[in-house]
Length: 494
Ligand SMILES: Cc1ncc(COP(=O)(O)O)c(C=O)c1O
Image (cartoon, rainbow, N blue to C red; front, side, top):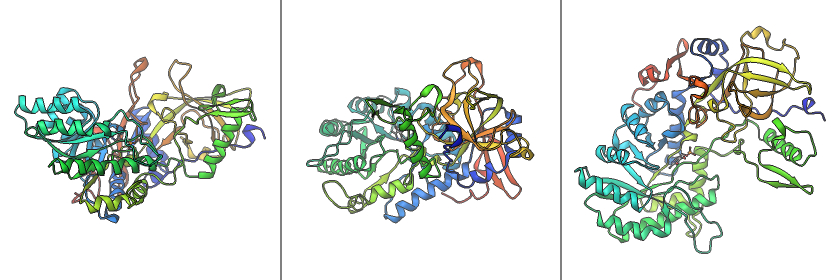
């Protein structure tokens, strides 16, 4: 069947309050008219709702501990300030993020420092008393040295581990950039014991960038064993931090995703026409009629993600000890710490781009040029495929612009660069956009808004606003002008 006759939609999953925001085109057009395209809109009240969902999983399993937002997922002040009103903590991965968290209202007991750290970052973390997630022996020694040299308070540390193996277990939790191999724990504990005056080991941690429950279960069980070793050395650890990576389901319809990936495989094998710019196949190829390679895409349709994924992990049996992981934590009275980035800002934002030009191509497709570049909306960079929502400037045009019905469009960015496509995929829209319309890319708050943004060609970076509802409907503030007193219902949350 010809490509354009059988559109392959990838409907985004959209939940309240994003649903209502996208149903307010005049409000969104007014924002972009005033503040320019592209424009990022964040929804602080939804981040609080996401914390509650994680917290209810803790309650279900009778567990205590911190839900730490991995700040790196979004630079927004509004989101971090709103989080400060909840019972969440924050995980900072740079000196600037640490300063930002403090300025947004987080007290140091609700801050964890992770990632590669310069001496200045370590110093400030220790100075204020934030917990430091130590990635290796060198960092441990450096922190102890700073504490002694500058008379800092005794630092609370978590030892981050990776590369867990279980005897008789087929799965292996792979080596990560974060943390020391679990086999090096003894050396780390020897070093910690030498620095008892400067450091207190409060627990152990891991962060694994994988969707595999089995790998994470093995790592969590490995942490419980590591805690036994700490206790055997006379330490009194109380926290197991299992990092982030709980994921997000970006698509509404699993069948659409199945259909799309099947057709992509057929296209890679040359058994149908291409679905993407210059025959791009997202990592697949064909060799003697057999498909080769692996799909280089995020699993955009995920029925179990976020808090639901944590629930499933906690219900999973420990690979060698057999009992559910939640039971293991509970039996030992350990606190559980999680560091979700992407999952905590699920449904918390949208990126808007103005349509500048629409051009028909000889093969029946159209090129739609947007006032935005690929790095302003990094969905493709993260392998996430979803359809934007068309917000007409004039709603009276709905369905009246020729050609009516589904159209296949390539979304070009505004950089003078061959590769600047917002997505290489041929995107199907319900009708042809017109210059002046907006395309709204839902759910970009996790890594896809500002993580990759830059000033190439001296273009300004997208502005960001925080949107919230009150009795008069949608309201907004520039992101850095938003404080939680602006949203209804933020009092008494902590
Ligand atoms: C140490 C650490 N914790 C948490 C996260 C957050 O991961 P995610 O956004 O997948 O939940 C990351 C992401 O890179 C990380 O490196």
